[in-house]
Length: 285
Image (tube, rainbow, N blue to C red; front, side):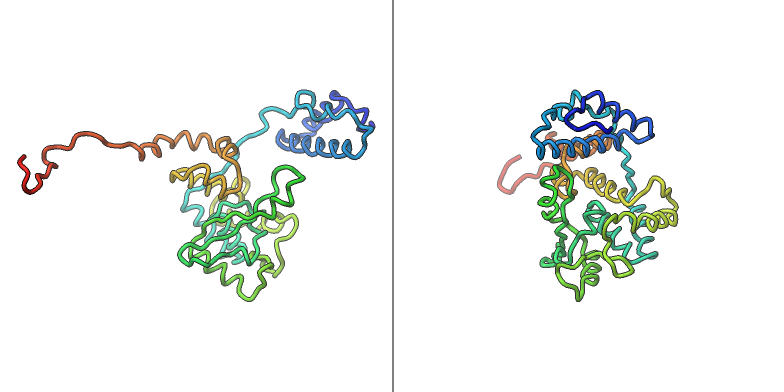
């Protein structure tokens, strides 16, 4: 599109959106691109009061998102498979192993884990070590920086805590906790730094690297917590997502196992058998 923003119409925006379909982009990618365009157009309108056609892109009925764009692709791994992946990662590269261990233990996104600082390792209570996990930058753009500065406490095992303590030894509190083997932080476009290496770990573990990514460790954490009966509210807070997103992406998992979990709350009020009745001293039966 080469037309000035103030002259854009809904038909032109929709034609641009549909052109992305013809180029082969996924519906989810197109909707994300649409959202970015809407934000850019709104920013331009705020800065130039001559632009008065904001309704064209702000009204979801005029420039709507593509339907059926969300497809759950959550790869959930059994506990022993997760353990095998983490062990294999440690064997290949200790630094990569630590990253995988942190993601599988906390359910954090890899992009959150690599932003951990040395000061975020809390070992005050040796029996219950914790990490102060940075939150993701998802959400409104004007709140992104503030949200990314927030931390949420997540539980880790004493074994992982010991490894992280060793990793942090001798480094300043504001230094990155997780580093690459070359001594550098994971940095910008972090996935480029571990994607190939983790794919090799997955292959070595006998799995398909085209479907099993580092994110699978996060999905497996959330699924494991759900199946163990932990409340969605607690899981959502620990994994820095919303209850709505958990219900949307893990609905089938919740539905399939809800009966098994809810049976734990059943109260047996049946009358005790005569054989189980004990007569107290001084009382006549």
